Structures are given as C-alpha cells and as structure tokens.
Image 1 (cartoon, rainbow, N blue to C red):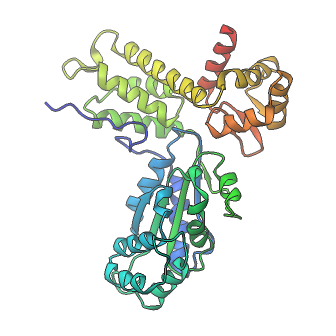
Image 2 (cartoon, helix red, strand yellow):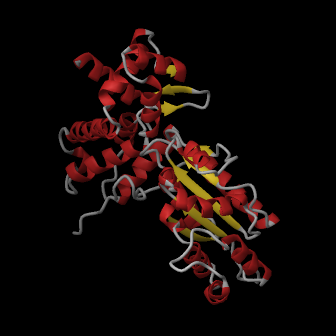
Length: 359
C-alpha cells in the first residue's frame, strides 16, 4: 500500500480544525467589500509566531470564501503590470485587463506601481468586475514581514482601496509585521487577527481526524494524550501526527505494546527541536533570552511586561530593547495584547527553564 503523506508544518494539515471566529472575521471583511464596493478599510492582517497556523488559515479562507483568489508572497507585488494581468486572469477577465494594460504608459523594464490604481479603476469603469459571473478577489500576501520598499507602493495602493474594485488583501506575517508595514508607509493597519493556540476541542478534532486521514485512526484516550502533549499549538500537533505516522504500523496499530509512549517521546523531541530552532534563528538567541526566563523564574511568573523584560537583559550587560524586539520578531517571545511578553506556550517556558538550569 502507498504510505500516506504528511505535509511539513508550512503545508496544509491533513485536517484543518477550529479557527471558526477567525474565518468568520475574514468572511465579514470580504462581504463588506463586496456589498459596498469599498475596499478602503484596508488589508486584513493575520499575525502570530511561527507555526501557529497563519498560512493554513489564509489558504483555507482563500479556498472556501467563494471569491477568486491569488495566494503568494511579497513577490506578487514586484510588478504592477504583472499583478494587474494576474488579477484579470484570476477573475476570468484576462482579455479586458490585457487591453487596459497594453495602453497604460509604463517605464521600460517594468514599474513599481505607477498607474496601478488607475488601471484598476479603468477595469471597474469598463464593467470587468460586473455580470452574473463577476467575482470579488482575495489576494493573500504571506510572509509580509519580508516586504521590501519597492514592493510597498503597490501594497499602499491596495491598502488605501482607492482603486474602487472588490479586492480584499489578506496580509500574513509574524508578530512584528505591523511595524514593518509602518516603516514602509503602509499606515493605519488594524490589529486584525492575532493567532494563538487552538481550543482544546479543536486540537482533539485536528488530531483525531488527522490520524484518520493518515490511516492511523486512534481511540479517544490516545487522542486526548496527544492533545495534552501538543499544548494546543498547531506546529506541535504536526509533530505528534508525524511521530504516529512513523511509529504506528497498520497491523497492530495503537494496541501494540508501548506504542503510545514511543509516539509521545518522539513528538516531544520534535517539539523541543522547534524551540531550539526559534532560538537559533535569533542572533545569539540563547544568551540574550536567558535573562528573561531568569527574571520570570525569580518572580514566579510566566509573563513579564515588555519593559521588565528589557530591563532584565539590560541588567545582564546587553542591549535589552534590541534583544526583546529580536525575540518577538523570531517568535521566541510572544507579544501579548496588553503589552506583556511570554514564551507563549507552557512547554516553551519549561524548555527555557531547563536551559537556564543547565547553564
């Protein structure tokens, strides 16, 4: 038999569970654009730490919302000419959009946004968005924290919504994406959706249905044990699904002696590797973050104000502000809605405490 395949953590999970409120929010944003014809509310932002399920949420929305969709990264914004043609192709009006683009004056070698909004307004004036088969468009820009200055002009045109077309831009990025957008002149972006862990019932569903899709269907007590081990974090769910796929055979399944313990142990190891990866992607991550966990342990609290975290690193003889900002940008620290910081997941906090004890 062909072995079932499990995508990496960046791919869609075998079963997408939960995020009902977040999907409803995006659907309401799209409905507003369609009903009013006004896209001036700007882009819909989805942010969170690496592995929390941002990309999956955006892709599921784009595939289920009923609108035409383009899903890509900031490179979609490299050329106004090519993006305009791609939009026309996506909504089934490629010929009309090409006719408009061919008469639009643009510099030799392409452009970085000149005439883009006016071309879109022309497409609207010519009725290319109308008719019984007319569609709105969802444009998903993933990894938005990597936006470059030359791409920002197009994004500003789309964000301002003066093009008059039913286009909803969904921006997906890490926690510091709003500050990146601000540096590039994309202003007044709403806080949008800030993803956190799943609800426990959604974690159970993701694991139970995911295992079934991988031909590793499990009894309730196994699902509950893996849900607990995952701490309701989507990337961790993938760790335990991957471990089950590798260690549970089709003949004896979960009845095999010690199989659940082995799956949990392997999933735990993958979960720890995720935390180490987050630290390693941050320059001098271990040294610059250990003062934060030390301060948390000293005050018996998993949460600190951002100011207290900065002071803890400063007191250790390093630049606290840059360290904390880097930790947030690399998903080591989670920035709370009230300005506090934490390691986001209880097991990440324990992992850091263990590193501190080892030092």
